[in-house]
Length: 290
Image 1 (cartoon, one colour):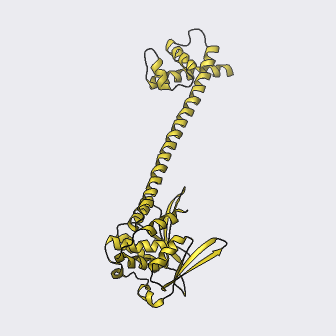
Image 2: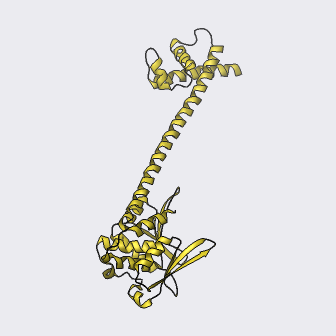
Image 3: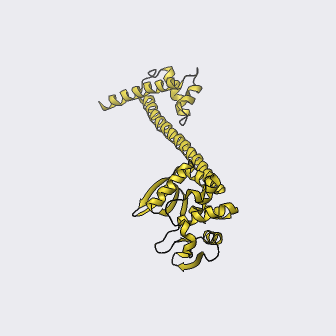
């Protein structure tokens, strides 16, 4: 089941008090799209059946179609006289009412008829495909008045509202009544952030290990060259100590090598000794090339 259908199933399962039934019907009708007929098509039987149940008998028709893309369900406004009060693209605030429950019921109906929401690896996307620019502007204003954020865009001549922000999407779903799906989005976001943090930590640790291995390999090459070519006593006691520690601990960090020295020395102290070893090794290489 797609996440859109999960949301619509939760919305359709919400109790509908009598005083909110007309608000939801108005939202469903507002999301209807069509030219000569007012209708919406859904591939989800639950959403289509929900719309059918909410309207009075004989005011909508319900048809099932099976094609190459699967089964779809079309709900069409059959009684034009009944729908006349819903037919303007300007949202009737008196018909909706003003409190959160009433506006939420209207948006619930709108989402069931023209909404989609996706949760993918690339991110989150909620969309209300109301169709015309005027209807989208009306919905945009209504949603923003409730303190929620959503944007307007278009594909050709078809306009829609959308949000790609997980927190805004969660707020909108909660406001409409899809609380469980809203929580699911936030849980998915938390899991993604935890995994991302772990990956960053692992990548950082891997990079540190690789740097240590490369540095250690270079240090071991320098030490080997010096031991094979230097005169007796040319390597001082402090350099000989750190050289032996490195040879016995090729994977150890500079900080940990310093802890094994006697007396203990800091990371910068260990690094300074290896710089002296590197300089001595470079002198030997230059002498061999001359």
